[in-house]
Length: 557
Image (cartoon, rainbow, N blue to C red; front, side, top):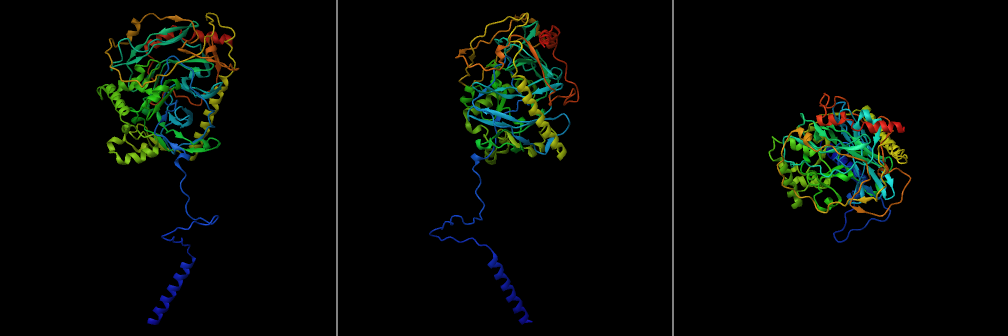
C-alpha cells in the first residue's frame, strides 16, 4: 500500500514540472536596474489607455437641442457665423431605452460652434413630443463670405409648413417689458409683436395671460433666414421636463472629424429637472445652454442667465415665465431664489457644476447626496429612467424599432438639406416691390456689440393691473412700412455673393416645402387638443394679420 502511494506522489510531481515548463513567466527585474525589452520583441502586456484629450468626451454642459427648446428673439437677427466648415454629420445610435408611446419622435443631432474653444461640439439628438399641430423645420449651416452661418430651426403650424411665407425684416420693438414691471406671479407676460397686415407691419401690444393647466404659451415671434423672416404664430407647448428625453452633448477631438460613417452610441442624458440654477440663453444663436457659463466671458459673447431677459430686452424666455407662474404657490419667492443661487455660483467656483461627465463621476463621490443634484446635470439613461422623479415613462426598443429610428433620422437630415437648398434660391421679390410696400434704399450693414459684463439681479418693481384686457388700454396699433434694420456700429461693405439675403427682401413671398418628417399630432401628449389661443391673438388674426401678405405672395407665384 505504501509503495502505491509513493508511486502516485512521484507521478503528480512529474506532471506539475511539465505544466511549469509550458507556462510563460514574466522576467523578474533586478533591484538595481530594469532591462528594457529588445526592439521588435513580442510585448504581451495590455497597452496603456488612450489619453483623454484624444477621446470623445461626454459633456456636463453645452447647447440644448433647438428642437427641444429655444429662447425667442421677438425681433430676429442674422445667425451666428463660425469661421470653419462644420464636420460631416454623425450617425447616432440611441440607447435601447426610449420613451413609451407613439407621440415621441426622434430628432437627430447636429454640430454647434463653441466660441470659447473655437471648435465644434456635437448636439446629440433628442426624443421630443412635437407641439400639437406643429411641424419642425430643422436648422442648418450655410456658407457665407465670412465663414459658415447658422440658420435656426423653428416650429410652424402644420397647415403652413408646406408653403412657408417669407417676410421683410420687422421693425424694432423699443421695449418688450410690461409698463408696471415683471412682479405679477399670477399671470405670464406675453410681449408685443408685429403682424403683417395689408403689406405693412402692425404692432400688437403686449398682454397678460393666465395659462390653463400645465400648458406653456410660446408667443408669436419671427425667425431669421437668409431668404427672409418667417412669422411663427403663438402656440401651446409642454413643460420642459415633459417634452421628452434630451441626450448630453459631446466634444470630439479634431482627428475624429474626417471619419465618415462614424457611429455614436448615446447613453447619457440631461436631467432637465436639475437645470434651474444652471440654465442660460444665447439669443443670437437661438439656443439654450446648460452648465458652467457664469464667467464674464460668456456674457461678453451674448450668453446670459435665463432670467436676464427682464433687463436685456432683446429676447423673451417662455420657460422662465412659465416656471415662475408654476411655482408661485409651492415655492414662495421662487424668482428671488433663482437669482440668489446664480449669484452664489458666480462668486464661488466650487459651487458650479463640472464641465464633463467624467469630472462629475469623480467629484460627486465626495459630495453629500443632497448636494449632488446641483452638480449632476447629466446621468446614465438607465439611472434617469428608473428615478421616481422622472416624468417620462420608458420602454425598450427592439431591432425593428431601432432600424425605423435610424431611417427616420436620415429623412430629417435630408429634409434639412432641402430647406437649405430652397432658401438659397434667388428671390422673386427683390427686383420689384409689391403694391403697398415702400421701397427703401439699403443701408450700411451694422453689428450689435455684445454686453461686456454679466447681468446682475435687479430689484423688481410691482406692476399695476393683471388682466388680459390691459392690452385693450394700450396705445392704438401703429403701422410701419418694412425697412432695412439700423443697428449700432457700421462696418465696411462685404463682398456680395450670388445668394439671397434677408435684408434684401421688400415684400412677402412663399416657397413650397415637402412634408416635414417631424409633425405633432392634433391631440398630443395630454390626449386632448391644446387650449384655444388667447383672445388677443384671435382678435389680431380676425383683423387679417399675416393674411394679406399671403395673398400678395400667391400672385407672385
